[in-house]
Length: 301
Image 1: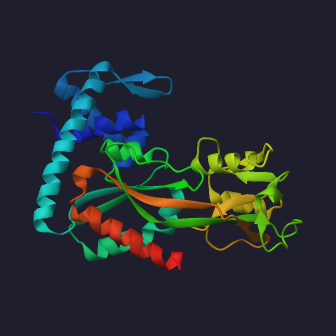
Image 2: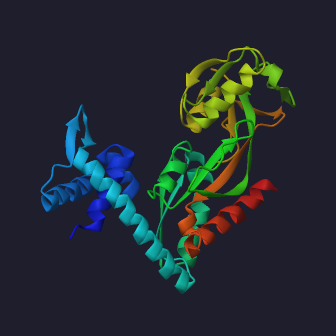
């Protein structure tokens, strides 16, 4: 009989594209994932991974087995959901995916309360780009995701995923303290023309929002510094190298030499919780969504 944990490891490698990424998602070491795959190869007498450049890829047989694993994992989830629902208390493993600033600014307090109040719940956190999280939820790789979109670029929930609003996260323009705009009490989007920008790399929701907004003024933005971490962006602003648009969530105190200026209309990204319809009755899901909203309320005020 095929071992489910080994199938889970193979499925994770197929979804995430590498052993190391699968290990992060599962909470294992890369060595442990490799061992699981090796045991599955011996168990099935089939080669499942093949070298591809510096990484690995699933063989045709492995892809077929990973698809079967996804179906089996969905069946297991339904059984676990039914048992947890009968108990009426959050229990079992709950894998939460969240983008970086939510993982830093919102999830710590939520996870702490979940852990303190529900000893039978094994809540885990994986950092996931908001572009990827809906698909990972739909495929059963993670149980619940905290994702976001922007006011001018809303994203509908994909098929097979339910969504609930957590709250709105406004953004400010951050400029060096000696910048000509630093004394302004507010900015309009027309004031942003001709500035050197510090922003996230292409392909991210925040990058797309900035480019679309600035192009709407009739000008191509000068994206001089493209770095993923907001704390790195703050350091570049403090060094006088450019300006940035940074949300409040997870930002923390501004460093010396950085001024924050409201932009009107205010850019807002909306945070959502995402989960599969089949898991909607899990007490772990409903309790986590409740806590996400409850811990967000003080920020909204």
